[in-house]
Length: 140
Image (cartoon, rainbow, N blue to C red; front, side, top):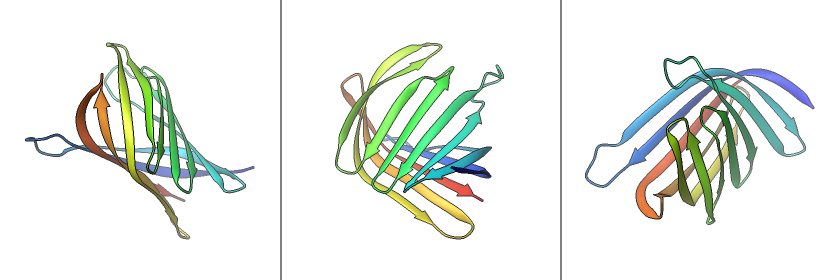
């Protein structure tokens, strides 16, 4: 398995009824590996001033995106076009049940970058919460 250093930019968009679209963007160094048709991305992010990292592992495959986070945030999210997935989202403040219905996923690459993402409906503790999108740009 070949591993290369990359620069990852992740943009999260959240649309809640009656509110402006929330945008969260992070950029971090990471590594990208591949085996067969599956790509594996790893990077760390620091969501607050505590300095405690959130380790993120992403499995990228045509038609699906799996995100596993560990550290101060712990969850496993699976996005597959046309599928529903439930998970627990644990933070230092407590945990909540989340459910995703994925409308679309994508994975495109060229010589300089890999772009992946998903558009999905989000429910929290059984209540419809938002329409969301995650966009990843991985630069070689």
